[in-house]
Length: 228
Image (cartoon, rainbow, N blue to C red; front, side):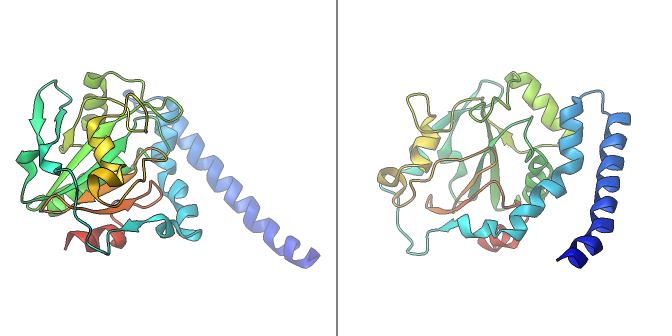
């Protein structure tokens, strides 16, 4: 045991040095359009995702293997875009739709970049929609206009962003998330977002096919295989 601790100590020291260098670099190179916290979180995103890979984040994925059909029509839903315009989900008929609750000040905010990459790769058959929400530790305090600017400048986001609202179950939950988190509406899934950047996939026929937690990258094969 003592030998193990002795051998692991140099590795721990190296990790601490590397961590310190990364944080120090971020502090020195802070982007003018990001806070220190946001700069650090953006740089540390791969490290934040690593524990999920070790602890089996994919175990929390839910797949509609039985092919259960929705009870309420997905395409009857409406939402308000970031710019204030209304959009009917009928517009999305014939394409897969990935719906994600987002936040600008979260350890998983780096997924904005991966969501954009996913959208660019599959956009002929995929709609990606971000739903900014301030439900978790108040990590989205920005206005709708500031959210749009933040996403565009820092992550090159071109996919759809909706008006900020609530995604957790309760009186203020948006109608879209009422559908996504109610088995009596979507046919099988009662899982509401447990943190920022939970993801729901709806297929070309308006059927909810999968739920992915925040610990699963949008570019993980468990997601991309559902887009084939």
